Each structure stands twice: as structure tokens, then as C-alpha cells.
Image (cartoon, rainbow, N blue to C red; front, side):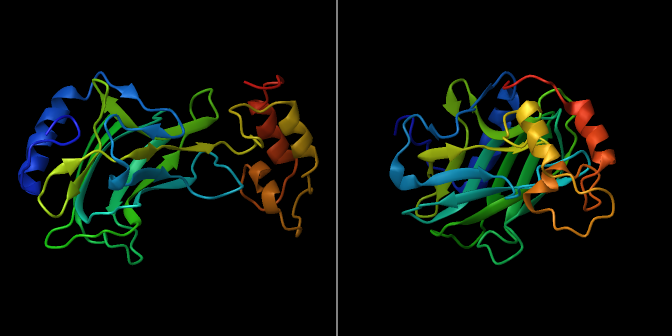
Length: 254
């Protein structure tokens, strides 16, 4: 039925076939980097597949736990499977684990989970056996540890393409056919101290840092100034300034 749909298969059979083909094609691949990317041939009725980052004003420092979620929304037809090929910045993040659903009542809690990790690429399949859902919800959670071992202070997690075709798919419960999501969105996190955030620590960030200094052992709530609490001891002091100085570029902008 054209590029929008693959040949109808039962879901377990489909997953097996796609797994084998995707493993053979994992490299090379091109990264979908736009903040919103329209899938080629996608039909808006099939909804949105999004990667979501934690909501925090504090940024992240090496050693912090980062939980990214995979969410489906705006579905007009029930689905019982999601397959996603995801790339993450391995210089800034290490993947610790994957969980189906969110553990808090998602329709995907306890779903079957297939995953394969090849360097910085995750091939993920989540399957609802004997049920389906047409509602918005978290399909899976990916738990990372922040590393930020490279020069870039922004890290992204995004869906990828294989040979110019988005590889992520939704499986329709009605007939087991697969469709492209109409819209996919990536997510990013920023390093602590990058107040804007724009991927570096410059004079604008220095100005913000100086406005946040509390001194040691302060009882003052940090609020958004937690972005400059590099050692996570609930104050912004000389210890944090030392770490800020190591990251400071001095330039304005990227």
C-alpha cells in the first residue's frame, strides 16, 4: 500500500522481520535534528510520537540521572505497538535502563519490551499483548546518567532515519498494519551553568551566575539559581565558581 504502510503482518511477526532488517541497516544513519519533523508520507490522523526531557530549571551535571520519556498523542485509531529507532549523544549520556510505560497508570505499563543498543542507537519495540489504546500516554522511559564528556553543553535524543525514511512506526490494533507517525519530536538537555541555554557558558551566563551567589551553607532557596549549584549542596559558592570557571568560554554565543 505504498510507503505509508508496510505489508500487513501480525505484530510479533512484524517485529521479528523489522528487527532483523533494522540490525542490518543501523549504520550509516542520518539524524532527525529539527525540533519538529514531518514524517515523509505521514498522515496526521496517526498522531504524534515525541521524546520528552525532564522539566527542570537546574540543568544537569555529570552524575545526574536523566529520565527521557517516549509519548504518543493525538491518536484517532487504537494502537498496540510502537517501534522507535532512537539516537542519543553518547558523549553526554550513558543509557542505564528502559522501562515500558511510566509505572504510574500508563496503558503501556507492563507491556512487552524489546530493545537493542548499538553504541549510541537504541532500537526499541513496545507491545501491548491482548489490549490496545487510543489515548495519549507514555510508552516508555529511558534512564540515562549525565556525562557531558564532550565540549558541547547541550545533549539531544532524537528519532533517526534509515536511507531517508523515518524508521519509527505505530502498529494499528484493527489489522496489525503499521503506519508512520505524522509528527516526531526530539528532546534535549543542557549542562548546569548554561543559563540561556545555548550550548556554551559565556558572559551572559557569568552575569546570571554572579546574581545567584549565596555563599556557603546558605538557607536561601535557590529557585532557578539551582542551575549554578554544580556540587548539589543547595548553595552557590566558591566551589561552584571553580567549576563554572572550568566551563567558561568567554565568548558570546556558540
